[in-house]
Structure formats: C-alpha cells, structure tokens
Image (cartoon, rainbow, N blue to C red; front, side, top):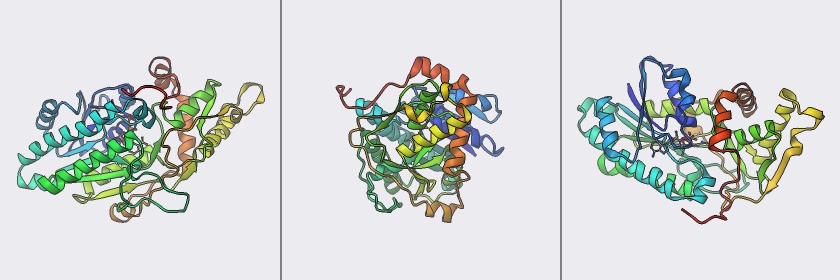
Length: 356
Ligand code: NAD
C-alpha cells in the first residue's frame, strides 16, 4: 500500500511513520509543513529507509497535495497534520481554523479528485483517514460515564471546535461524494518525541532543570492517557481495516487527574534521577491559574475498536510513563535544541493577550 501520512514530523505522525515502516508491504510518504511542532529529528530512525520519503508541503496547498497524491499513486491518506495545542488555540485561534478546517477541506478536495480517477477496484480499497481527538465531545462530569462513537459533539476550545469542524467535513465528503473515509477520536497521548509544551514532557524537563512544575487550577481535571505506540497501531488498523463511513474511539482506559500524573512523574524521577540535597521533585509543584474553558474530564469507551478491529493497548499508564521518562533521560540530543531555541516552557493560553 502507498500511504500518505500528513503531519508525519509531529509527535503522533512520526510514531505512525516509524510503525508503518516496520511493515515491508507499505510505502510511506510523509507530508509536513514543519511548523514549530514538526521535527525531522524524530524520524532519524527511518530517514534512509527504502520505503520512506519526506516531502515538505502545506496541506492548505491543494495543487501541491494533488501532485503528491498522483506522483506517489496513493492508496491511503492518514491525515494527522494539525495545530494541536489547546493553550496556543486560546492565544491564536486563526492558525487552527486555517490548518485544521481549511487544510482538511483542501486535502479532501485533492483526495476526492484523486479517488475519482482510480479504477473501480482501487476505489473500493482507498481510504481517507481523519485522525481526531476525544476533545470534540467536550466536558464529561465525574459520574463514570464515557464517550462513545454516538456521543454528541460539544467542543469547548478553539482547538477542539476546529477538530469537530474537520470531522464534520470528512463525514460530509463520505455522505455527499462517496469518498471512503474513516475517522478515529483518541484520548491524550504521551511517549517519546512529545513536544515539551504538553503536560508530561513539560513536567519531566522542568523537573530536570529544577524549574516549577505548573499544575492548572487544583489539578483535578481528568484525562484518559494512551501510550503513543499503542495509538499508532490503532491508527494502522483503522486506516487499513476500518469500515468506510465509521468512526472509532481509541483510549487506554487509564483515567488520571493531572495532579496524579505530575506526582507519578515526580516519584519516578526521585528514584531514577534523585535531586541533589535529597529534596523531592514534588516540592517543585506550583498551582497556577486554570485554563479558560478547561474541560473537567475525558474518558473513552474503546469497545468498538477492541471488538471490530481486535485492538488492545500493550502499555498500562505506569509502564508507558516509565518508558517515556527513561527516554527523556536518555535522549537530551532530541529535546535540548527545542528547549533552547523553540520553546523554553513559558505559560501559554492564559487568555490575557489579544487574539491573533
Ligand atoms: P503535533 O503538533 O506534534 O504535530 C503536528 C504536525 O503537523 C507537525 O509536524 C506540524 O509541522 C504539522 N503541520 C501543522 N500544520 C501543517 C500544515 N498546514 N501542513 C502540513 N503539516 C502541518 O501533533 P500531534 O500531537 O502529533 O497530533 C497529531 C494529530 O493527532 C492531530 O490531528 C491531533 O489533533 C490528533 N490527536 C492528538 C492527540 C494528542 O494527545 N496529541 C490525541 C488525539 C488526537
């Protein structure tokens, strides 16, 4: 299969490219604009792989995408390119509307034209896979309920609203034009190569640099965590075996409050890299102003993908987090240049600045 991965230089996209290159039947074309979040260093392991190729392009550039689809005779599009950080969407929603909504529309237009020119047999097996988030479902109370594929959309942030809009466009291209689409809505990912603006890598790196560990509000907000390589396996299954028109919820059944995540990182670092003077990393925790519109809880019912596609996560939160922390300890070559030149850990999304 010739697979186009958009956003393959990002956190999840690079895990998907590394995973797909492990299957000799796949040829992988990674298309990425290389925004602040894109990093070719995350692809070092496969950069010379015979079945892998990188093309720098913007998903909003329909002509460039059309040519890439044609030149590489693409069978499957896995669309991950997006602006992905909720806090940045509060400070500057315009880029989220442009890439996540307009970019998805341009990609759908190019994919539809490409699909219409395929033989009937290849039209049957072609897939457009939109990689989305559980945040489109909005805020869950602390009542033990879960998001299912039937849960109504109720996004709270500019980021989740832009992902909800792109999900709707993708479904419309199936209903209206017959494009064989599949969607997946996944919970919070963590793992190696995660840009250190997100909670887990930010806390690990701030701790190593003896900086405050910011916890929004009281730290009671709950997320359902999934190790990134488990997500990459789920995405390959959805893209290659998912039923056209269907969506699949993906989650690790690992609900943890933000405070408990930060405390677990502190305990693990206390044993792997003790602080000088015998203090605990926990002492660095600093409670800061909450995120505006902060959803209280996300929790995924993943029974459909488990039942229909035979997927289960391999990692528990504890095993995945320990692997992740060890990876950051062993790989400063990857994160040091980001911390020194792209993002040093400053607070984003406190809604004090003018919108742009
Ligand atoms: P990321 O921010 O790490 O990576 C995004 C990638 O997209 C970057 O490499 C960036 O350069 C690229 N990109 C941005 N705008 C582009 C454009 N206009 N054209 C081409 N490339 C562009 O994001 P991530 O965490 O890897 O998330 C990937 C996808 O998965 C996103 O669609 C996100 O909504 C979704 N998702 C993420 C999570 C999570 O926990 N991180 C959970 C569920 C779903």
